[in-house]
Every structure is written in C-alpha cells, then in structure tokens.
Length: 139
Image (cartoon, rainbow, N blue to C red):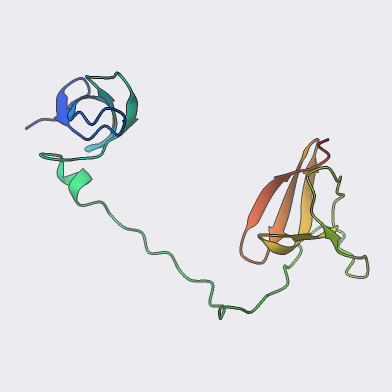
C-alpha cells in the first residue's frame, strides 16, 4: 500500500480516540504528522494498524554515556576565549539576576556552570553535562 500525503491511515488520536486520519507530512517513507478526521487536530503519527515499515521499526541511535560515576560532580570547563576567573565567588542562578561573561553560577537543577555567552535577556552556560540557554535579568 502506498502511503502518500493526503491518503488515509489508521492512527490513534488522544483527543477523541478516533483512528481515522489523513497523512499531513512525511520524511522519506516515515509518516510524521497526521490530521484526525473526527476532531481535526494535527499530531504526530501513532500507528495502530498497517503502517510503513519506517514507522513500525524506527532506527535507534546509541547515546554514549558521559563516563562519570553517579554522584560525582565534575567542574565545568570554560570555553576557549572566555575570561574565566575561578577566584570570583559563585552566584546562585535566579531569573531576576543579571550575569556577565565568565561568571560562575550555581543552578538548582544543572549544578555549577560558567557563563560563556550573553545576549540581552539570555545567557549560555556551560555545565558539566551540557550547555544550556537560560533567561536572566527578568523582573
């Protein structure tokens, strides 16, 4: 069976529990978005019956671990070109506070980090596990 944009397909709608949908978007052979014929809501494709092989057997990407033991806290490393001063005190992150390039912050969820970019009301912070974009200077 050919699954083309505009053709009917079975999928589960979480809003109305209907299964009849129209294909709205595809990437290659994989159906990515459908529209419910009952309520008109568009959502991701959740196959229930016949579906393309690409949707039934999705490819899984292996995510490599960080190599850290749980419970250990690695200190973030500042990016090249950032004037990082470890002698300055670490400040607790708060949405209402403003931060400058190179400042050390302590976030409740992400832990210690170093501000590596500042633009208007956003800062980019290097944490031990990832780089996050946070808001700052909001009242």
